[in-house]
Image (cartoon, rainbow, N blue to C red; front, top):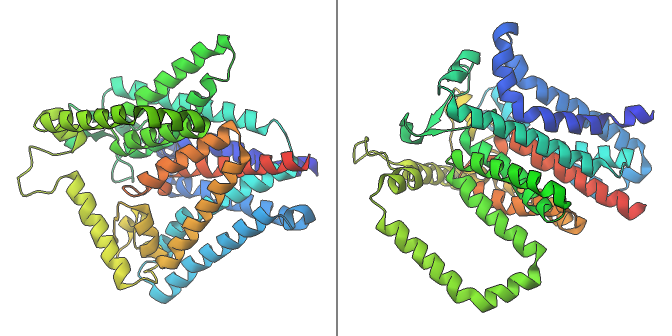
Length: 433
């Protein structure tokens, strides 16, 4: 029985290890085995199995059944899932298969959390946090090494192992489609998602540097530099901004009094630096780096063609107008990256909040924000290195979700929500011990 109870925790380890390599493995292995669609959805069937298993065991255990966190998150997950079902039934603007795929993408955030929380509570192993930290750093380091290798290899290398637009994944990315300026995505789906994925382990390495013994500082510093380099080579503006936001948040959380003192003493210098940065950016606005890398202006396009930022604004405005016209939602699969498969047409909102509001209405968005806020609140109370890192990364993700379909990426979603469930579960175990 004890070994059976450990299944959800083993599932957490497995999902954390597999998800960052899911795209790479699915595309490459399916070349010889066939069944690409099976490879794509197998991870979700495993997740659903682990979820059902965890919930059954939780309901069987009175302590877990009566646990406030479990009951609240389970109710929110059920309501959120029902909203997806009801909006599909009343709208039916997508096929059933597309709606189910979109609903899975949206709901698996709750599933990851529940699997990890219940799994940790079932086994009550005090060393889980140490194992998890070692695992995610090992995985992220491997992802970084593959990304570094990708920077030097021919840019079409992934086409030889199954990557193609026809098979659902681009084999390479470039700034403004200029082959002289590549962007790396390693084993993750795209550069922006890779940047988002690396924020959490990069912050964790920064947090650990001041806590490890002297002989390990050099290793941590080397890994930190590697993660930072790969994050830079994604050329993801969202990730660059995210690491700055989360880094500042981490500093403030760890040194509230010192940060407040420094802000009061040196606020004029900070303002001067911001102004200086703005002036420097403005003075170099016509340089290729600023125009292409910062503002993503493609000088090869016609003057009338929209640039990257203009397209972002266009998609967001289109999504907002759709929500205003139908605040109850159009149903899962009508917005976001899954909507590309919608035969009736979909909306790429380039904003996760608008995507959810478009699919399951304003009430659905409210449920999602409430659940995320509740989890972050619990992480603040956990007061652990990984918990603080998750809070800091959540601040970055809250902003990044405004300009990308952040939580639709399996690697980013699994990493944050599984770790959140695990850390909150560990914190409850410590309270009870």
